[in-house]
Amino acid sequence: MAKHPGISSAEWQVMEVLWRAAGPTTASEVVDALSGAGWTAATIKTMLNRLARKGAVRHRADGKRYLYSPAVSREACVRTEGRSFVDRVFGGAVAPLLAHFVEDAKLSKDEIAQLRKLLDGKKGR
Amino acid sequence: MAKHPGISSAEWQVMEVLWRAAGPTTASEVVDALSGAGWTAATIKTMLNRLARKGAVRHRADGKRYLYSPAVSREACVRTEGRSFVDRVFGGAVAPLLAHFVEDAKLSKDEIAQLRKLLDGKKGR
DNA sequence: TGACATCGTTTACACTCGTAATAGATTACG
DNA sequence: CGTAATCTATTACGAGTGTAAACGATGTCA
Image (cartoon, rainbow over the protein chains, first blue to last red):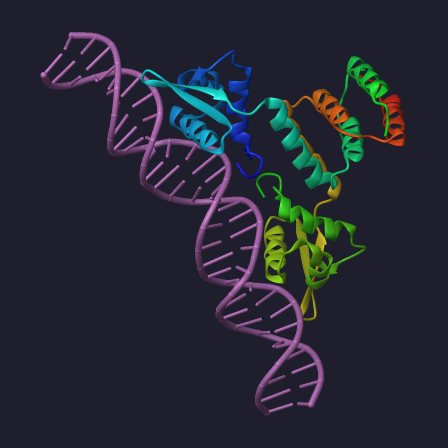
């Protein structure tokens, strides 16, 4: 895959199922897991296929059915997506991004404390 | 305009020019500002047009040319995009997003101090 | 006044995405 | 064995995107 897999937002939901799954997952399990999403089984198959073509999932035959598993880690995808977002919207500057989300979000006291701890851990460049 | 304007990433760069501009801007000024982006003038015109159709920019005739100005604030767009990103990638939870970017980014001591100050200002839900 | 330079508008095209129907293969049941 | 059920693969189609050429109106300079 020349570029980053380029996982779209519908595809992301499919990936989430695979990432959450303990091991290789059949298409119907994915369909079940996404029963609330309002997609038909065919739609989900299509997305699995596209993800496979993009190299984001692997599929291995198991009798008549296929077993799907993620080929890219959630971490890696989050990093890729995150970078593309910060580049697009914040010109690549993470600090303003953080400022924006801190201001915009309603955080609990606990979460604020957690973040403070994280910041303490950062050395600072 | 049923939904959010839905500004694509190329379009975002055009919007940035308009947002940065002091006042109404001609298409050629936009083209000049984006001379480094590797687009032809026609491409940029197309994007201005699409943005106008989406309601993201206004254009007002000024003699033979048009003057473009943003119809939506940068703030609003950042909020919209930010929300869509946090929904897609972090299931809507801002705290993990913040954690991710704090960990992933190289922040300067100053930036860390700034963030700490921001956190101090947050009451906590 | 006529040719040229400017602008904006229209049209184009290949590719991705969301969404899904349909066709093809394989299995399982009667 | 034959027919129904179950899977995957192929095909489809409209909207959005990136990228741009072509067309048309208008103003400008010689």
